[in-house]
Image 1: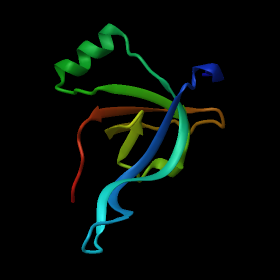
Image 2 (image 1 turned 45 degrees about the vertical axis):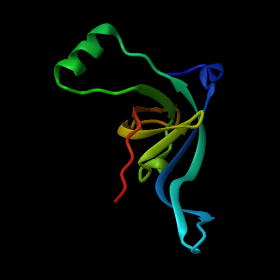
Image 3 (image 1 turned 90 degrees about the horizontal axis):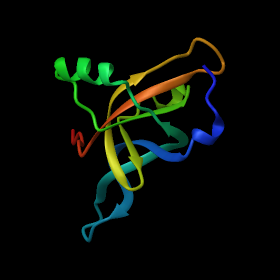
Image 4 (image 1 turned 120 degrees about the horizontal axis):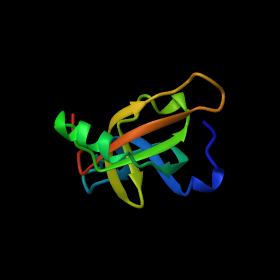
Length: 114
């Protein structure tokens, strides 16, 4: 599958939740989004049949994006697009050839504060 590079219109920051470079008045690190990698991505839409099948199985999501395959984001749990933070609920990895794409499912407003 070859995708036109003009479709890569989103700038997505991948990362995790943890200590930031900022500190509070007690000198303790402030928790927040930590960017590990910034990549270009494209919006992905599913067919009506695919959406109905997922909803029937109780799967909900807010957005799907696609990126060129990048194994460096396997450990990341969050994605930020236009200052909105999403939890990565699924990363459908395709590493079958050098020009492959990963589809990433995102859910808005979910942070893991472990």
